[in-house]
Length: 320
Image 1: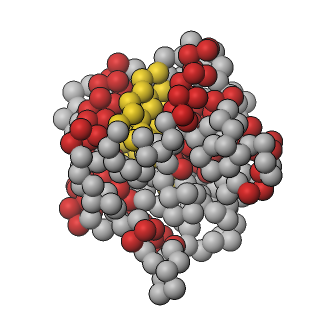
Image 2 (image 1 turned 45 degrees about the vertical axis):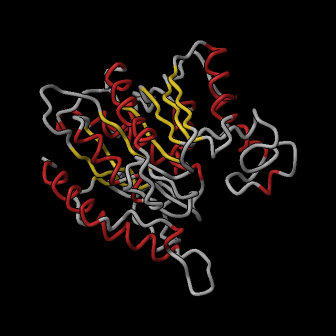
């Protein structure tokens, strides 16, 4: 079941039909062509066998943006598997308003080729909230565990995201529950705690780093494009939500993104004793995905591309 998804994924990646980023989509006046970006993604995922995260529809999903389908995952079995293994949920970036194909499809194929089960997540974007996006990833974690026998996978789930998807992964690694045993829905009985979190240029320390990547947390937070209040800023800042139950992290980015964000998160993990691995590369820029040329920037930097192999080794050590 779902074996055909790998062949479709390989074809989509050969066509490179979903790697075009918002930077490639411009209206005549120079503004971002979000419509074009979302259409490419929607056309691509329509070719796959998808799993809707909620059979009866996601809570709060009201069709306010007809360009956004119901949140879903595309499950892709790992190639040449010899035993049951965990699954990596892959979350694209795009600033919570668009979808970056190279951080979704291409990354999923690389890790599927490396033997990992992957699940490409289509989560809600603006005008839905970050709470909605987070609920989508949490539901995906629960769903994989609830359907592990059917999918022939183990209980272990890792979250992997890039840019906005990295922020989302960090949030789900710092806010989770063990499920509700009394729930009528089997999916809701499952824990949404990931076993590992991989952040690709997504550790944005809103609270722990004054004058941070997007906003000074001591200033008017309404200027922050990703949060609506001081309460949200604190909640969505992973570096101030680390606990003894936080899972291990793999953090990588290039120095074009202020490395203090990675340092700040690493320091917070160290303070609580949570294991992590960190790689900061001097070359390249934000949004490189695999850094193998299969990205919107056409950037091919072999040294930076090594992050994926290093991450695969790390994930195996985590039991994924």
